[in-house]
Length: 255
Image 1 (cartoon, rainbow, N blue to C red):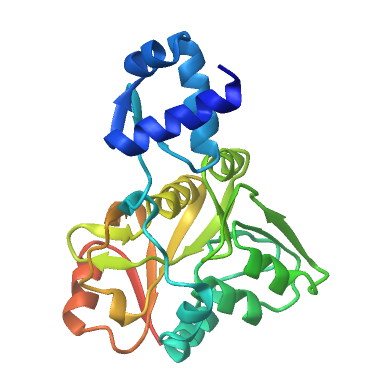
Image 2: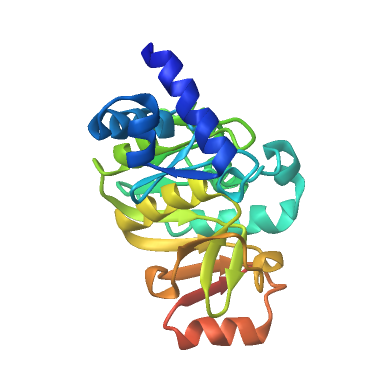
């Protein structure tokens, strides 16, 4: 069996069964378990399945790759609130900062508002990188990775590994859901895993979330409140939500 044929057989088996173990794939494909593990790594990097402990699970029609709302549609949702949040977030940036922007539309509004200061900006967003391309004093670094077309962002193992090479002063990121007890969540696990990596390399973590996201529990957990230093939201955020965050020693700004 050719390598390409084995890849297709593995993906077919995983999709048919939902999940399968390395030992079983080794027997069915008549290769060593070590070979199967390498195959699974490559197939995960290509976005065709997800590695799990001892095997792999399907990403076909699953919440792991739940369809994201197209960027153009997200861009106009709560646009005025996002612009105000973005401008408030920009005021936290100082010349010489090393900052990290995720692929949210609010981060893109931040890129629009950023003055041309000496900064280093790391991002997994094509839109953010393009927005900053004309600002000569800002050094822009993109993660690379698997292109998520709807969000115009890089995700997957390559994007996650590239983040390991960096350390930043401040992370500005958004999400799909903000729950008072369960923390921050995303609808898509690939996005969630990249954001978890981002949080791990930042000295200060700033969550940008308009009021509509509060009280929402999305599919995949991203972060607990102990991982977040500050929240920037809009004036629609309830007094109870603000008090709950401040009780957790989180700085809250509403604009």
